[in-house]
Length: 185
Image (cartoon, rainbow, N blue to C red; front, side, top):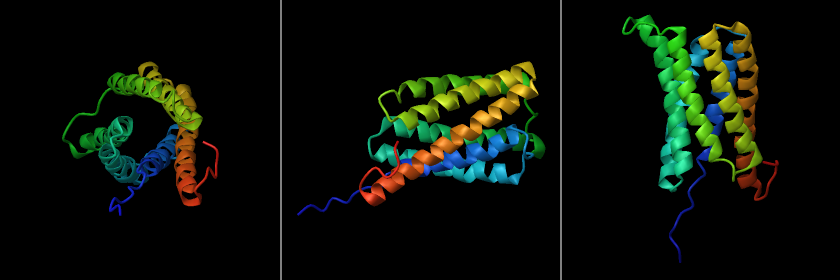
């Protein structure tokens, strides 16, 4: 008799935390809403902490890709909120647009390499990482060039990227609940 218990899949938690937070931020980037406590709170708790938790749980399953992806993007969200909040608190000067461009470019390079790790994965997972790579490069370009048009375009790419992550999250949850692929992914 086996006493081994089945571990839950932490991937959908991380994907949903990433997806919902990405949509909210990119609704702002696309020009629909200002940056408010809605984005900050989601960035700290669901985009940030929930993804870090998912990454730690992926570690316990031996999934290096999931560990690196979820913990990195979880800490991305927390660092982004800190970049916005620390100057308001008077703890640090606000970064220049060019320095924010470098921050986003580095995340784009990281994400491009993570995308390469998805090439044997599902088409939806590949799309999430490809669209996120494009998003980071567009946001970096926006900040390097000071272009609001590129920022708006990035916002729409980000909304699509976030929605694809939410879709993949729900597809994985429904697959497990129904014991079959309920939604294609």
